[in-house]
Length: 91
Image (cartoon, rainbow, N blue to C red; front, top):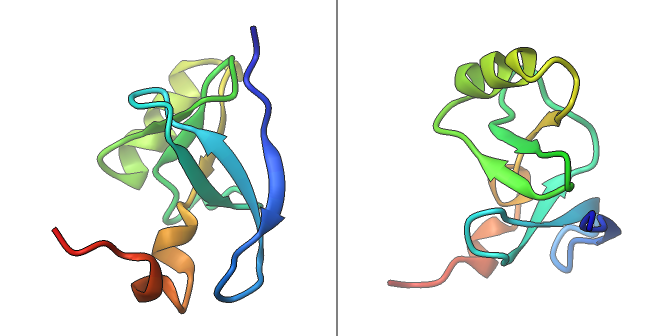
C-alpha cells in the first residue's frame, strides 16, 4: 500500500508544503514542495514515506543508487521556515 502525500500550508509562514509520513516513526513531516539538491536530506521511498538521511550528500548518493525508484531530495520545512522556532518543542 502506497502512502499518500498531501499538500497544505505552513501555519506560520503560509508556504505550500508537502506532508509525508516518516518511515521510522510514521509521524507527519512537512517538506518544501520542490526538491532541493543543495540542502535536501529527505528522500521519499517507493511507498512515499520520508527517509531522513544524515546529510545532503548522503541523500544525493542514496538517490542515485536507487536508480530513480525514490524521489527527492527534499528539505524539511522545519529547516527552511522563517517562523520554525514557533513549532519547536523544548526538550
